[in-house]
Amino acid sequence: MSSKTEVAVIGTGTMGNAMVGHLVRRGYAVAVWNRTPERAANAVAAGARLAATPADAVRDAAVVLVVLSGDDAVIDVLRRADGVLPACRPGTVVVDMSTTAASTKREADAMARRAGAAFLDAPFFGSLREAEAGGLWPVVGGDASALERARPVLQAFSDRVFHVGPVGAAATVKLAGNLLVLTMVEHLAASFALIEANGGDPAVLHELLGITGFRSPLYQAKGKQMLDGDFNPRGSVDTAIKDLGLIVAAAEAAGLPTAALADVRARYVKARDLGGGELDMANVIVAERHAAKTAALA
Image 1 (cartoon, rainbow, N blue to C red):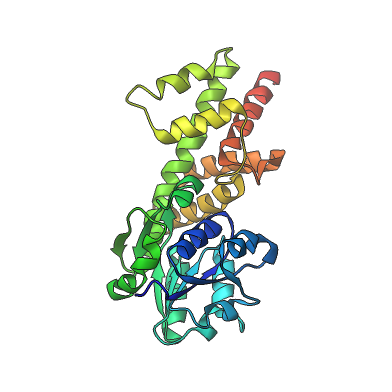
Image 2 (cartoon, rainbow, N blue to C red; image 1 turned 120 degrees about the vertical axis):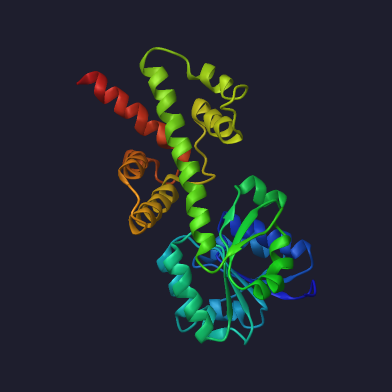
């Protein structure tokens, strides 16, 4: 694949914008579309062309990256009359990097096949820091030959690309990873709130989590945000709630117990109800503190 191959990026939120910057610097001709055009301003400033519709963006593209939030949004942008699939050329590789259910990936794959396009299920691990550094970790489900055609595009902003099986397999790996992350963050918040409710200083635990067998970059980063009250979004409470809903549904479908997962989700829902939906997932500590105060007043 030549570095001049045109790439379309559908969805220019925080992560999509970062991907566009790397692609342009690699010499790709990039067209972008976003439901809210103003949110594509950074991509345009980086050198991308702003398209009026998804179809306009993908018409000349060999690879299309879909970076959206929510299953319904992905399916809609693929099948609508001015959407991605009606405008794809035969052999175009559509790479859905959104975090959605495995069933949604398989539905999208079937739609792409009918349109003569190849489809890859490719959510990614990594935060804005990794995206800006070009160090994301996509996990990919789908045909190996389609992945090889898209691989140079993915490598423009990735540290390593993992091929994990057929379409749907990557979505499951991503949800399993998010289960770990979201549970760790909520349990860290509960631990800090427990210490505070008993008159202690959670900074001590935070320090211990950096030097003992519990040490984790995630604990360090999210713990510092909680201690500093820094809730500028890296991954929002709203997104955590959406992902945990997908995780609970996947566990139910597999016959796995879901009570503990539903409880974790309920804590994030409480943080949203207290006004923190658009804030970073570390804001779940507000829900834990609220619960502690409510219990103390009972």
